[in-house]
Length: 257
Image 1: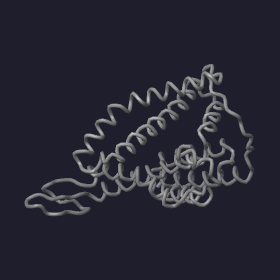
Image 2: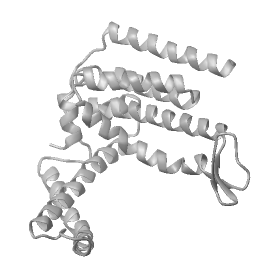
Image 3: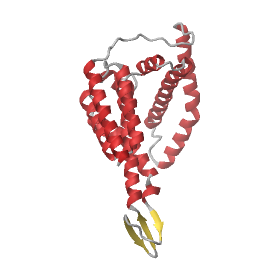
Image 4: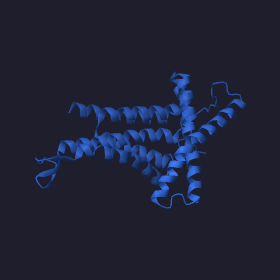
């Protein structure tokens, strides 16, 4: 079983109605995008973290590592906003380098912080949905929203084939490591080049075998899965309404100010 699927099926929120989880994630994501508020972002990050770790039973260290992935890209992408090379020092900070200054303004620093927190809060909404909801349940929710069947089928197949590619790459890399293929930088480059050369061909063969197996089981162009009935609970809907109303109030208040 793939790692993300293992988290989904072991989650304490696994049997919560998918429509409820989908609505919560999308509405919260919407407020994160339009508000650009540190307060909203902080609340969303804290609530999603508690839901994933306490309710979803996701290990705290795993949640931290998952959040480090987007944080790394955000820090690299906001360097241009934070650091400027100028002959005139700005009001945020200034480090003298001869006749020049490595400097930045308070406004750019604040904007970078808002951007990072807003993006992390938005990513946490997607983590909440993807780590608590198996892919077939998400597909059924999209079908209920009248999403085109072709699109949902492609999403499910692409999702599966991504992990086929990853599993193939892992198997090749393990075989190379057992032959000391990564003992130094030179051999690592050579081994990586060999893996990249054969990865696509092997993954294509595995996908063909998977398609043949699906046809042998009666695949006719539509993937059918058993549907579970998890009716929404009033308490869950009530808490979502209250939480989204709080986010709406903070957003309106910030925009009005």
